[in-house]
Length: 236
Image 1 (cartoon, rainbow, N blue to C red):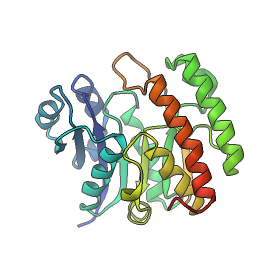
Image 2: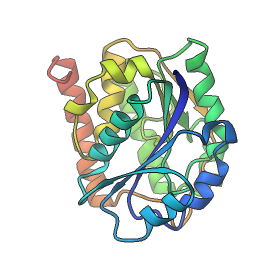
Image 3: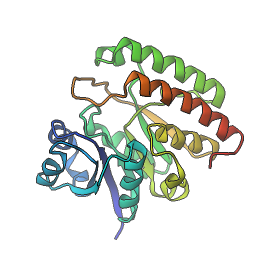
Image 4: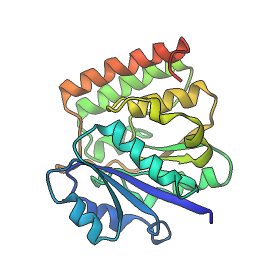
C-alpha cells in the first residue's frame, strides 16, 4: 500500500524538544514518523518511544549525514510519495509540513525546502543571531552566483523529497557529516531536479541544535569544495 508521507527526524540528544516538535506535526502525518537516534547520551530514545514514534538506533555517533542516510533508507521501505526531514530540536515549525508536501504531491517539484531567510525581518525577529544571518546571506549570494540559482538560503534543515528523488540521488554515497545537506542540494541542481522553496518562520532558542563556529568553518570550506566537485562531474 502506498504511504503518502513519511516524516523522519535525525536526532542527537533531543529529549527536551521532541515532545514539542512531535505535538506540532499535523495529525494526518503522525501515522508514519521515524526517528533515528545517532548515539544520544540522554533520554531521546525513551521519550520518542513513549510518543509512539518508530525509533532506530546507531550504536554510536556516526554523524548528521549518516543519520539522514538511515532515516531515508528506513522511510523508503514504506514506499511513500514524499519524505519530510524535520529536525527534532523544535527549531522548525512542523505545522508548516503541508507547505512543503503539497507542491510535491501536486507534481510541481521534486524537492522543497523551508526558507527562514525569505524576509530579513522574519529571520532576525525569530531570533536568528545577526552573525549567523550575515554568514547565511553572504554564502547564499556566492552559491547563487556559482550555481546560477536564486534561492534565499541553502542551510535549511526542514526539507521534503519525492520518493523518486531519493531513490535516484544515491544519497548513500554522500558525506556522513554536516555537508550532506549541501551535497543533496548540489546534486539536485546539477541533475536538473525541480527544487522549490517556501517561506517558514524562524525560531531560534537555547535548546535548538546549532553547529559550532569551528565545525561551521569546516562546513563552509567543504561546501565550496563540493561545488567545485559537482561542476567537474566528480560528485554524483
